[in-house]
Each structure stands twice: as C-alpha cells, then as structure tokens.
Image (cartoon, rainbow, N blue to C red; front, side, top):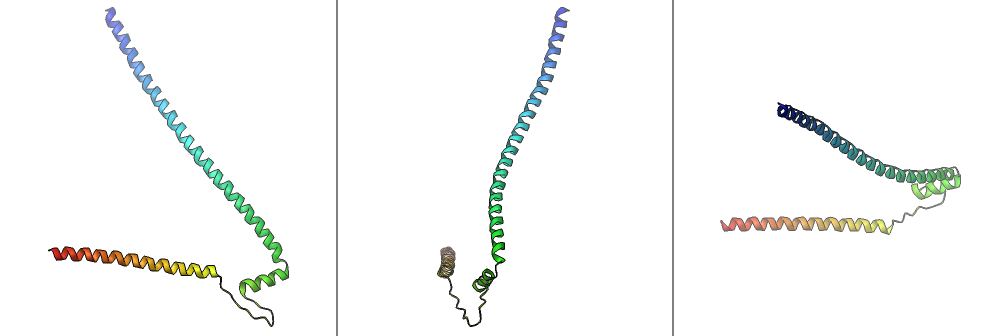
Length: 140
C-alpha cells in the first residue's frame, strides 16, 4: 500500500512537472520571439532615423538655397538677367543667338547609337532563331 501511494505521488509529481515545464517552455519561447521582434523593429527604426536625418540635411540645404534665390529674385537686375538667360528675352536692339551645349548633342548621339545597337542585337537574335527553325524544318 505504501508503494501505491508512493507511485501516485511520483505520478502526480511527474504530471505537475510536465504541466509546469510545458508552460515554462511556452513562456520562454514567447519571450524570445518577442525579444527578436522588438530587436528587428528597433533596427528598422534606427535605419529609418538615419535616412530621415540625411533627408533633413538635404532639405535644409534646399531651404537655404531657396531663401537665397528669393533674395536674388527681389533684385530687378537679377530678374532681367535670369529672364534673358532662361527664357530668351532680349533688350531693345539685342539679338538672341542660342548655342546648344556640346554635352547634350553628345548624349543624343550616344543614345541613338545605343538604340541602333539594340536593334542590331534583336535582329541577330531573330536571325538565329529563324536559322534554328529552318534547320529543324530541313531535317524533317
């Protein structure tokens, strides 16, 4: 009889151990998952903070440039020169001669060359495919 009681006590202790062990393991897993989630979130927010700080610096520079531009635009001589340069306005008796930038011409020429190269490459691929199809058809 003492052995039966001892077995019951041992079984009860094992059940308690399994129950509380399972709860403990679940709690530990939950805490580690939460910790990992918050660590990842903190890293993301830190990266976002760096990006926003860099953006703020550029925006402050832009603000300073715009304030300077506002000051310049209050000067009538600057406005007249700006209009002549950018909008091809002229004073009485002036002739406007527009000189194109060599860099722009070179960019246009380069882009035309790139387009031609693409057409040549596509044409080569098409010819290759036609040759392969012709050879397969000839073998039959």
